[in-house]
Length: 258
Image (cartoon, rainbow, N blue to C red; front, side):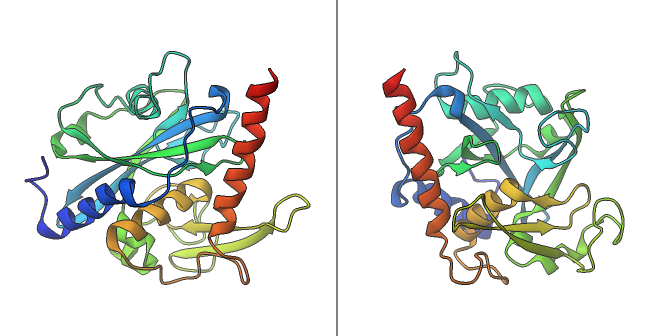
């Protein structure tokens, strides 16, 4: 299945495959469908490095206009699984063929909580036929641009220095730092502090939920930590996981009481 990958890329993919069994993934079957979403983390290897397919959302969308995102969206009533949701959304948003024999599911990771309080499940897959990249087309009104970014540069942002990055000081990178910017924000009146990670790219900045998911995927794939502090001082990474569990308990109650 992954015979076209280099040895290094195979090791990364094998770690992601094993992660689905090793890491605790909560059961979402009791959650209301309107609170569930999935995104496709589509990886491929080019010039010896793993890259990830990303999009810039249309500026005319009501939710997160102009921001970087994975192909993905909310679960429909007719979706048999969250894996199907991610693949269906990728088909609708970037034209990735459904049931494509060159798209191989690698793993399904734990859900993340979006700004809209959705439980977003990352579905990681590998594309083994790079010719298909040229066939991808952004859906008018939903996606402005399709681009890619090296996965390892999420761990060490300076590795993106070889990329055709947007100009420093431009609309898409108004920060002083060359490759990476961060800020901390207290969420509502809780003690949870959210660290916003921002990565300079060749298009819109990779930030927020998209950055959080990529950090998680990259740490598993390369089995090493980031060159920067992922969490705010005094706060462990488990705090975000606990917040997800709290929302799941609340949403389960909504189903029970309906």
